[in-house]
Length: 167
Image (cartoon, rainbow, N blue to C red; front, side, top):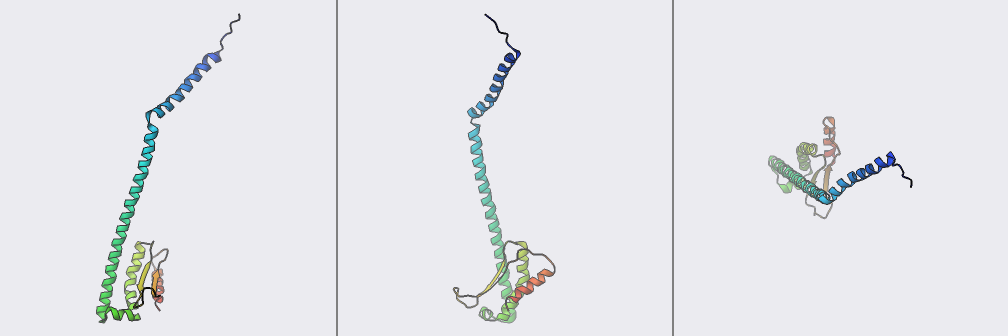
């Protein structure tokens, strides 16, 4: 019988292959047996639910802030209307029918409405003077909702174009 000599390649390659295979399987088996995968999945779900709750809170706070601003603007508009009516010795019924008084009211409140657009550029300014027209009928609606505002001469132009809409 002939005895074959073992080559260096067989002596080193086969044990080295087993070691590399063992080193690859050991971390993978630890990962599967330790439950890390399920923990990571539950953490991802918890993180998503936290993000949704956080977004909900942010939206609620923004809504509350905007309603607060609307309430302040409404109080300002009512105050200016009351002052205008007292200065002219008129009541609300006379205001509803007097276009000149409505234009004067618009001229008074427009700078504040323009400032409102600067603070919140996502909305527009709508002044609804429906007079004595039923809700279902067409009325005079003046809306002003530019995409961007810049200070300077453009404000005066915007103001004049807003007033022209009443004529």
